[in-house]
Image (cartoon, rainbow, N blue to C red):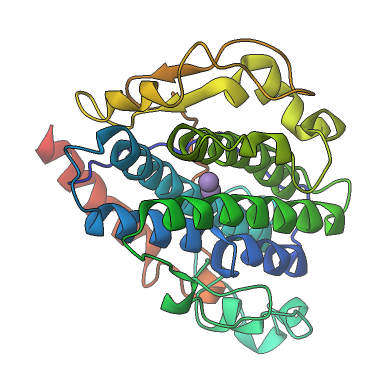
Length: 310
Ligand code: MN
Ligand code: MN
């Protein structure tokens, strides 16, 4: 089962400008072949399909617990996409009727790469890649062969790193929101690649972690990754559960250390979830008819219901 917490896995800085084409670039990290929907889908179905769960618990628990983190990554990228599509919030921008729609309030959307993100989704995210092609089940590998699945997961995390580095390189220097998404996910992806390498090493004796980092660039070259490295995020794996999946410490054990090139120290399992950060509250946009119809009335009804629930 899953439990949900109304926080973002890390806080994202608000965007300085509206940049729908940059939001489209970020879509690759959501619905691309190596995007968060793919890591989520792979680990989720592998964990559902896992045979001899009890006998292979550290390996089952690794895939099962990382599944939950990938769902939080899907949420992080989706928030990033919506924030960059939206741009800076306007004070009281969600009040009133949106003005005269015959004055082309969304003319800026005419030339954007993923126009349907605005037309269909009101600036929100959906599982498509940077070209608007739907994410699909063919990106999921769940063979039931533990070595093969773990090897696929290792490849997937390296592929995700490649995508994130390239998207990062495409974002303008003032795109703090998009760069934060990439900087954070590069650190966490590095943890996942490392953990799958250790799992494969325990099972086969092959020291796969020597291939890391792939692509061969240290996280210290990415300013947005720096504070996460300083906090030790690259050494931390979460169980994402109060009581379960603690066996991952058999793989992510504290006699193992951080990868060469990253700040040194022992690996550490955290029982539970990360602290996470505040989620930016995107306001309604009356001229896009979100949330429609008469905002003040909506907010009044919601506020009455909220008070009655306390
Ligand atoms: Mn991820
Ligand atoms: Mn991952």
